[in-house]
Figure (cartoon, protein in one colour):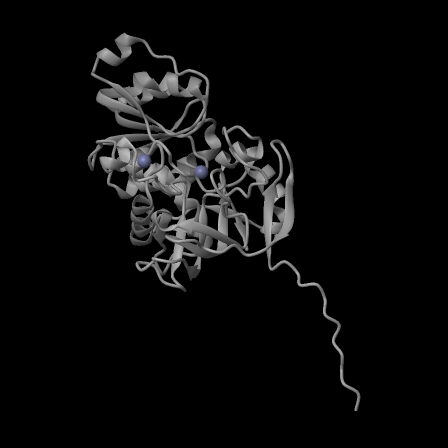
Length: 348
Ligand SMILES: [Zn+2]
Ligand SMILES: [Zn+2]
């Protein structure tokens, strides 16, 4: 009997990634070698990755110093596949998430004071290093959040950026249970903000443009819906006594400016919808009632873990549309269209 000879094929690269090879470029589905985790890092087998508006920073090269090709993605849910040297707190097989906070230097002034969220040299997955639009990614241990058992990967992913941002901004806003809290915008951030606000025990006012979101806003937990096209949201908020906090999620500086007069005494406008045009406010608006305006950026991996645990406990879930990794370009376009309801998630 003749010996069966099997032709040796050149070994195929063992994983797929959706990369951007130059600013303004399209997503390219490429094959890459599976990376190796270094000391203090883990290799994650990615199961799902959210498509966030901030991925535009990588796609269009809007963040200084990005090295291309780059794989975007900072809403990563997966399973630890391999641990690097010196990693003892995390184990192979553990479900983990990685969000915007992709690691701190541990040495800057803010880190020395424990304020890792504001690290001067914050690392961001998908910007500083390759993110979750790929089958395997490497992340440092300080970027890892454990995913609770009952949360699906596709549910956990958006909670790692949109979720943590709304959750963390609200829980640090100073609003107490029973306070009037308004959530401006019913989109990727807002639909989570409304849910968290209701579960925190606030009286929740949702502010949207047009009547069509009223039913959804109430289903998500708002007790009042204000259509800002039909009436002045600031006046409506004042009729209710004025807001303790307004969480501004829709990226419209004009809409945010119009809301400031809806704040009650000691009221705070918390800004998380990112735009680059100015919010208009007069000193008098701030002085009367000692009002404040504050911005808020996501949070650390520990904050992510709090967000995931609270979501599991309370039933807060993102509304999602899923696409396979191969359709990253289409998924990104869908997210950019503003028509997705409400977060787009890649599955791997
Ligand atoms: Zn994001
Ligand atoms: Zn630092």
